[in-house]
Image 1 (cartoon, rainbow, N blue to C red):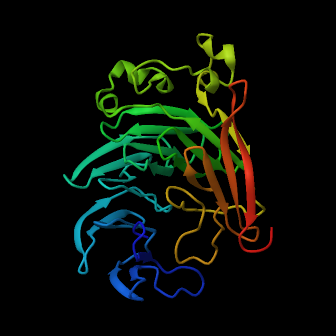
Image 2 (cartoon, rainbow, N blue to C red):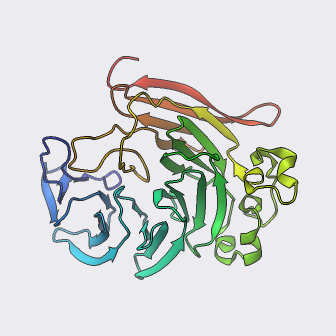
Image 3 (cartoon, rainbow, N blue to C red):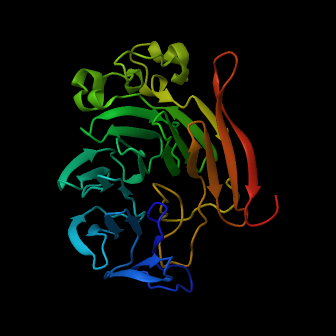
Amino acid sequence: MVGRTNYIALVGGGEQPKFPPNKVIVWDDSKQKVAITLEFITPVQRVRISRSHIVVVLRHSVSVHRFATAPEKISTFKTSENPLGLCCLGNQTLAFPGRTSGQVQLVQLARGEVSIIPAHSAPLRAMELSSDGGLLATASETGTLIRVYSVSNCACVAELRRGVDQAIIFDLAISPSNTFIAVTSDKSTLHIFDLPRLSRENASDTSNHDRQRSPSKVASSGNVVDEEASRKWGILGKIPLMPRVFSDNYSFASAPFEIGDERPVGPVRPSSSSSNASLAGTSSAAPSKGMIGWTSEKSLIVIGAGRDARWERFIVGEAPDGRRYCVRDGWRKYLGGR
């Protein structure tokens, strides 16, 4: 959907689709008719739309079109195999997998400039642009590390550890003011991490020295902030030559969310940046789980589909002793009773 306008992008899927899976239908809800149709040779994995662009993700390419009654193709980018349909579209920036597995292509739409970020050594699993387009978060199929990059210069400003064992990342979501990032996975746990507060100047002029330091130390004022809250292993993280898992930055709070018994099977594809619905046009769709939406700077919703479809609301708070926490504040089954 284009913001709060009347345009909705649709792609056929499921056992009896209304539209073929290789067509993008832009529906004008105010006029109750199809406004734009785009047809492709292969099934469409995902569509992103803004007031100026329509971006169509195929399994091995991304096609960018100008949003108009007669849409004009601007460019096509080759990608590595992208069965998850990973793609993020901001007002000025487009991000999607690179030609090499684990890389991200970052396109500045106004100038057509393309940057390559070697984000991970394993294939990408999830990515998310911040609401202001200044930060890009990524995760790989390994599911242990979340990396956050400055869009202005492609520098890694944070590396966050979800855990040490492999996991399927369901979703990444950056809070409205870029203060926190939330992560869900098939471990049925919601993690909340701090993000470094970088001003535009600091994001553009980050030195190599700062990039090599622990990213959570860099604040918007350029000062070092206390990172002890994110050090899970305490003094062990300060002992030289210890494995890096002891000194990595972990979530400052976590909470369990309901995942149910319907686990994703085989290739899955995420929502805004990552969920676990199966590919368009297939009948073996696994219900989406762990989809995150921030409702304010300190409250968020986690949504899951399937037989036990529900939403759960979580609050990020601070205890009298200064320790921060994440706790479930409410929930409801939206396809049935509570």
